[in-house]
Image 1: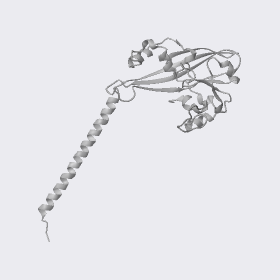
Image 2: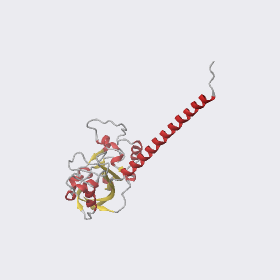
Image 3: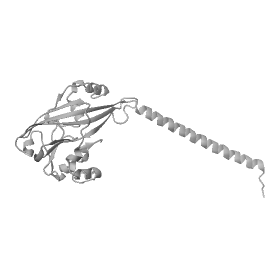
Image 4: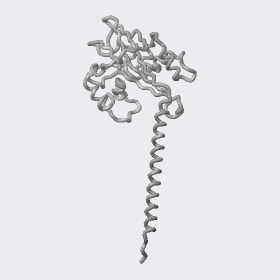
Length: 262
């Protein structure tokens, strides 16, 4: 029988201790690198331009049998530009909108909703309102398009801007406000076909403002709206991600077309 004496056992213990110490050192080194990279990512992430936060007031003038009706709605736009040291990685421009659909209440004749999305039937229709404002002031754009410098020039524009009616976002109303399946698009030049004789959309303007964001969409619609918002479904209750090639309007629209970022 071989008997191992103290020195050999001691050497093995020392070797194990050295291995453990080396492992801890490597782990500490990896941890330091991870912390450094995390801090670097946070630092570099703030090297782009923005965010630029601005509010836009859309004013709509409607001729009704009872006279002129004027409606205003304010939405907020936030834009950041990935033009710093991380330029070329990820999205070049980050956009977000906070606001709700503008509601024009014609009493017994129904309600007209100015949505947060464009009308796919009108080529020049756009959304959000901030995008329409930018398109109407292309003279201040840079040659490459909208940049941080462009955004600063846009925000310096204080005058009222006329909006061609063809550029307005999607306009809808519900034949039966209690049934979301009855939603239908209202072309800007066909208000009388949906609300009755004497209704005509006359004019629209947009301007930068400091007024508060317009809210109240939940009170303008019945309880079914809160249900689809909670379910994150389309107006017809479809919560799936797949849609048919040519879905009906109630399947295209969701609560996100009526409220965002609030």
